Length: 396
Ligand code: FAS
Ligand code: PHB
Image (cartoon, rainbow, N blue to C red; front, side):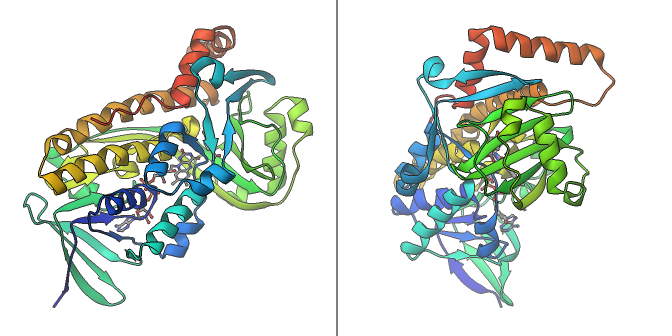
């Protein structure tokens, strides 16, 4: 016999989307419970995104978890684009009056988990065989197993924040779900190293050998990426090869500043664009990577998750506190309007900066022309700057 539990919002997944939603609902006095498949220690150890839009910082402030972010985050007013060694700075402050904050997703997750634990709120990690059911009724449930026990969690809303490989999206009947996908013919090999960044700001580099990104987590920790074959095992990329390619893909002045410190983390990230529509089915709502994926070139993944949650939290608070379903009924449309603009920008940045496999000379010439146009046109630089720093967040 399954053990009976109940809450108002069952949140599946304790990544940034699930944790942020849980925190915003808690601060609005709405009972919620988070189910997480992995041990919490695994969740806290993940190295993922590094760039926060101002609107994401605002949402984290609203959640009451931005104090360390303001203390330790690095405010950046621009990035540099390098094309075969020649660089052009994209000046966010001048072009948009906005900036971004460099603060690792790992730290955002730690801050959200710390806030949840301080409030004495549960994260049921190592939850297995999670299965949302009765989603078209007004009393959905989530079945799961944990530490050998069977559970039945009664709720009013199931929030699918369980990422691209989660279970929630699959609980929408195929005939009610439309998906859109583009898989890229390359991946990113990323390393983390205790080494001073080569530049004060991020450098995105196009070269005939492939893309490279020089990012950071602090003035003494570099986060570095090189375009690689999507099927490359990390073993194919010893540090010596990573640093050789990083140096070869950017101008000699930056290459000379590359401190070749041993990597403390190394992983290959696949590159895909993906959207599932709608982001709601009955009492199930999707947020974050559960509903959409972007290639990380535009630094949008984490920021899109935060934007979904900013809208969803408002919709659930109105619905569960005042019985007002209007924003909940509009949630999918409002979220997807932003998602598709971020999908476009992420696809554009990826297509602009990566070396595509041979075979399409016309495409290659268009790419070089677009890079040249970006370097020459302030209008084009403004388009990049306003998308990179984040479009205005529509909450209804
Ligand atoms: P997440 O995937 O972070 O969280 C989902 C959670 O649900 C996980 O903890 C998972 O264990 C859990 N879960 C899954 N199935 C479950 C189930 N059945 N039951 C219970 N729990 C379940 N974005 C950038 O902007 N820049 C980057 O550089 C970048 N790098 C990335 C590298 C990698 C390897 C990956 C996978 C993603 C990267 N992203 C990057 C995107 C990433 O930051 C996501 O956008 C962000 O984690 C989205 O957060 P969530 O939607 O919470 O999903
Ligand atoms: C990172 O620092 O991990 C990072 C920064 C910018 C990106 C992608 C990843 O576009």
